[in-house]
Length: 311
Image (cartoon, rainbow, N blue to C red):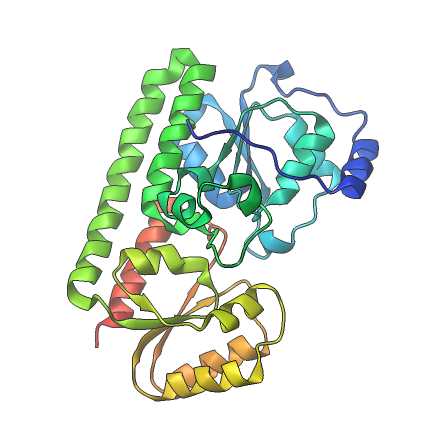
């Protein structure tokens, strides 16, 4: 199982939440229901696939209209975390609101951290998990777009559940095998894209889908100054924007990828310029679309990418 860790707490919020939820029960197992709490719907759905009927799974960010980067925890969220028997988060500075809640409640539930399941993240961060928690924009924390990382994460969930609920361990292993088979199909689709389009240049307004693009063998040529400014909610330097608009007009790019849940004037300008240039524009999200499983969502992303790259 990947190592468990806690991130730095924002003292004022932690104190406020503690006062607001002081009457909360410290454990959710009073009613006999095993409860998994996750930071987003992405990890909730993966946990559901592995746990099956053995657990109730609750995401904190439960709507595609909410940006996890900017989410502010509530007293209700504290009650949710206080009830958890197992917690699954992204880590890497992405969802530190959960860590604030964990410290505010004094929860002792095991915490599984997705970035610890990502070889690409571990290599980029040098294994310095605590330092990486400050959200270094040079490292892509959106590891749910990395099938290899999600394969390892699902295995970590199955392993932890097998320890906590040993009577259901065989069922967790079976569910894990089914989930892994679905990831095999994703890998095959990405391999097909790589075979046909390796080295094709793409532009991404943010690095949200970066791991998926890399797995497809594509070359992300987005200037770092552009993606970092957009991620941080800052203005893109004018010279960088001019370079990007020139790039969009020179015929090199195959696809432009945008984050459907965030944006600004510069992102709109890029999408408009790509449309004018006849470049396919794909929008990816940070949370699970309503009514889809993780595997369905990722398979649709892979299919859309393959179609966008095909003249």
